[in-house]
Image (cartoon, rainbow, N blue to C red; front, side):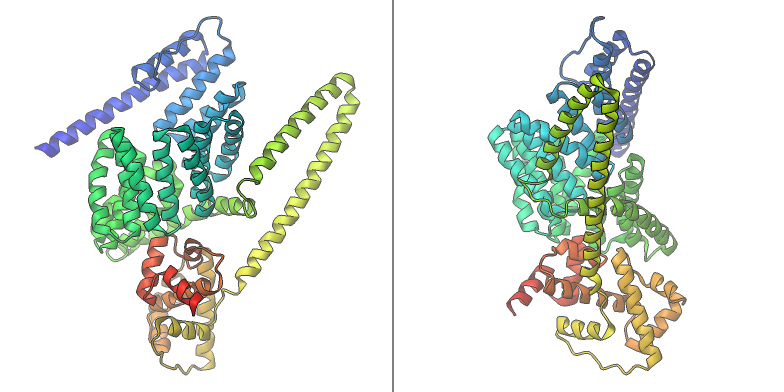
Length: 561
C-alpha cells in the first residue's frame, strides 16, 4: 500500500512540476513575441511564485528595452539550466550576454554559459567562457567569486579527463573559499577535490574531502546537498572496492532524487548503483539501473555520462543477451568518438599550460590589446576610410601569420606524441617475456611455424591498434582477421593454449606493465586509457587480479628494483 502511495505522490509531483514549467515557458514565449514591460513583469512574478528568485523583480515603462531582454533572457537561461534543459539554457544565455555592460553581472552570465557547456560535454566552449568569467572575478578581487570561478575551471578539466590540472584549480579555490569564509562554497570545493582525487585513483585522499563536504552541509541542514555528497561518497567507496557500503549509500540517495525530481543526480546515482551491482556479479540487477540512466542522459543531452551508462549496459547484458549488448557497444563507440575529438583538442591546447603564469594571463593581456586596437580603429574610421582598410589588412596579415605558427606548432606536437607512443606496439615475444615476469610464473615454450607466427604477429598488431582506439574485443579482432569468432577462438586456443579473451588481456596487462615501469610521466588513469580501459577502478581491479598488485604498487616495486 505504501508503494502505491509513493508512486501516486511522485506522479502528482511530476505533473505539478510540468505544469509549472509550462507556465514559465508560456510567459517567456509571450515576452519573446512582444518584449514589453508587462510581459517581463509577469515572467518574474511567476518565478517569484515558484521561489526561483529571492525577491520581487519589476520594471517600469521607462526601463530600456535592452535591459528588459537582458534580465528576462538571463533568468530564462538559469531556469532552463535548473530544469536540466541545457540546450535552451545555452540559447537564452547567449542572447543575454551581449546585452551586459556591468562586469559583475556579465560574469554571472559567463559562468552560466560555462557550467551549461560542462553539462553538454563541450569543454572547449566551457573553458572559453569560464576563462572570461575568471578574468572578471579576479579583477574584482572578490574571494568568493574567484573561488566560484576556480571551481568551474576544475569541473571543466575534470570533464576533459585532466584531473591533475583540475587539482591546481580546486586547491586554489579552497584557499580562496577559506579567505571568503563561505561554508557553502567550501563544501562544493571539498566535494570537487574528492572527485579530482578519485579520478586520479587516490581514493584514500578523496575520502576525507567528501566527508568534510558532507559535514559542512549537514551542519547547515542542507538535505539536498547532503544527498549529493553521499552520492559522491559512493564513488569513492567504489574506488576503494567497498561495494556493499556503496550499494547501501546509493539505496538511500536514489529514492530521494527520484522524489524531488532531480533527474541529473538520479541518473548519475543509478550509474553508480549499476557499477556496484556489476562489481558484485549481479548483472541482471544492474541492467535496470544502467538502462534508466542511459535514457535520462540521452534526453538531457549529457553525452559524457551517457557513455558510462552505455558501457555498463554492454557489460551487464553480455552474458544474457549478446545482441542487445552489441547494440549498446555500438552506441557507446559512437558517443565515445564524439567526446574524444573535443577532449583531444583540449589536451593539445593545454599541453604546456602552467598555473599562475598561464593562458589566463596571456589571454587577459590579449583582450586588453584587442580593446586598444578597437579604439585606434574607431579613430581611424572617423578620420579616413582608406586608413581603416590598411589597418584591417595589417591586422589580418598578423593574425594569419600567428595562426600559421600555431598550426606548425600543433603539427610538431602531434608528431611528437605519435613518436612517443609508437614503441607501444609490442611483439609476441615481448608479451610472453613480460607476462612471465609480471606473474612470476613459468610459461610453456611454444614452437610455431612461420605461418602460425605470422598469424600471431598479425593478431598482436590488430590488438595494439584497437587498444590505441580505446576499445578492443575478440569479435572485432576476428572480424579484422576475416574469421568467424569460432574459427578465431579455435586457432588461438590451438596455438597458444589461451582463449582470445585471455590472450587480449595478457597484451593489455603487458602494455600496462611496460608503461608503469618506463613512463613515469603518465598517471594511472592515462595508462588505463592507453590500455583500452575507460574506467580507472576497473583497470586497477583487472591489473591486481592479473599481476597480484595494484598499478601504483607495481610501479613502486619497479622503481626500487
